[in-house]
Length: 267
Image (cartoon, rainbow, N blue to C red; front, side, top):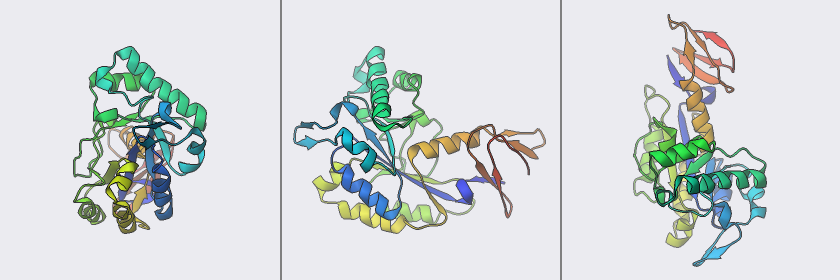
């Protein structure tokens, strides 16, 4: 018996992009073209501003650019979390969440740490304001789901010279590997600065249209893995109860089982 992603999919791919500069428009459109799903971490205090040659998307863009993607927090003003008091952290994360929810009508539950900086205190405050996960900048080059979603290390940055190789390795993951996940992160302005839009296009071409690959946002991955971890088994292991609000999929030999919310399934 082993777990799978929704509908029996063996693999998963997710993306994460920070800061909300105007290049998000082109990147989100590229993801839409190839059926990718991404999470965009935004600083609500920067909407519609220009600073040091950088231009940030406006409030009016939120419902269009990111229509098919997740919007998540990155702090109101992109302040270094390790240089803030607990009260300041509450405002930096909490007000970012409050503003993003008011502007989008969505429930915002994700975060990425500004400058990749965090501590146990930072993680605790993020949880206090209702955030479920947060991404670091510590690459792993592996396909493991995180032990702690508040310390979610990505597989690689999109500028990693091994990006295509890692992508092919994911697609060729053996069946015995349970729920392999590839997580790519970066900033959309880097494509324009470095002249590397073709890199992401080639990667999306490689990864798109796969029946065995779940294209998911960060939050979708987090919710699904937590649902798997929350399953309750009978002592003999022959029954499983799903107390979550989403279905979990289990492969029992050649049989694929859907354990629906609130349902008990016999294995």
